[in-house]
Length: 221
Picture 1 (spheres, rainbow, N blue to C red):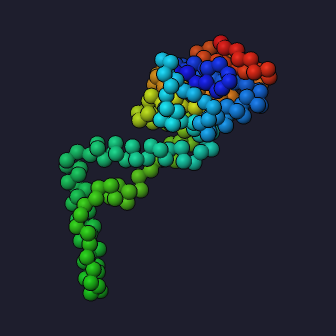
Picture 2 (cartoon, helix red, strand yellow; picture 1 turned 30 degrees about the vertical axis):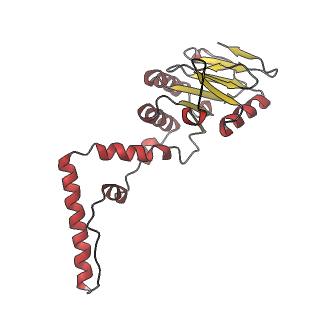
Picture 3 (cartoon, rainbow, N blue to C red; picture 1 turned 90 degrees about the vertical axis):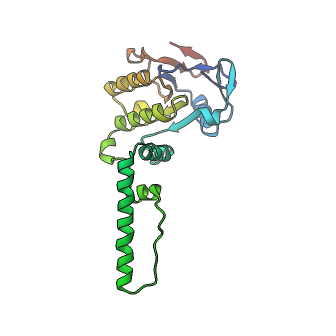
């Protein structure tokens, strides 16, 4: 897979190999960020064929500060949970639904209110009523959030190119290595954008590393 920000040369991204674009060139970084956000002047391709960028690239920006980072997976996770219910569990949920409606109806009779209840059983409504959601205390650190997002992409959108920025501002070296290893293990396409003056280090030797200097010259390691 390749991503091109015109008029610059393309950047190669392989599954399982984190790709880093690091620059201290404000103009280049601004164009790159704007291109990713608006999906303009950016072309995604594979095997010399252009890919639909809207369907194949997710620019997550700063996922630590994004309160809605898990929203795109909400319906997919709901479907997964409901599909995993066995027949015995579905029958029990149906019985609970009937019991709950019977209680409400009986209470209305006590006041002689002319009311009725919907006899139709809606499993999705029952699920939402329970307020199933992520455990906030299980995602208490930037590392935990990034790890969970990558795992969800592996499960539901493994072919997409995931683009993150500011990741290096949140992770120490130990967690950076763990995230790099997770990307490799899950065989994801991941591009990391970093506006920084930091030099190349051995920590990044397992990554494909690009740096863009003040003169827009691209160096690859």
